[in-house]
Image (cartoon, rainbow, N blue to C red; front, top):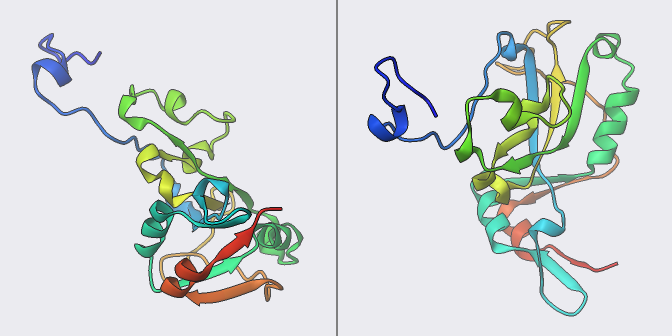
Length: 185
């Protein structure tokens, strides 16, 4: 319950709408850069035949909102290249990667730790989103320049060269969404 200075409950008595999302800003967040992408997992699949799968319609709808092209790549290869990068400057920064956890943030109580607590790590808040975005099935990399500040080197962002990927394919979004099929293993 949130009580105002006059003893009234903010949401019920004063008619203030309850929040539908939670956001935590910490000083120096701008020193952290985030790479976001969608994952193809069983959560976004739909069975088309006995052993054949395609992307489900809610995932397709979410992907259509993000542009004209899809770059399909291996997250394992990206992580490997980040761990083995020879760039001395990169060795001094930290990064975390993983899937987004989707939670009901409409029940946000104002306590940051209740909403975002996953591993009790400072980066947890970058890996939680409201469940209304679950169709994005997102995976992220957080590049942390908090202790060793990274000056933007690509517009307002930070570009990190990981080398030429061994496994990556570029598709027009509509072609990708309408032709991707795979077999159950």
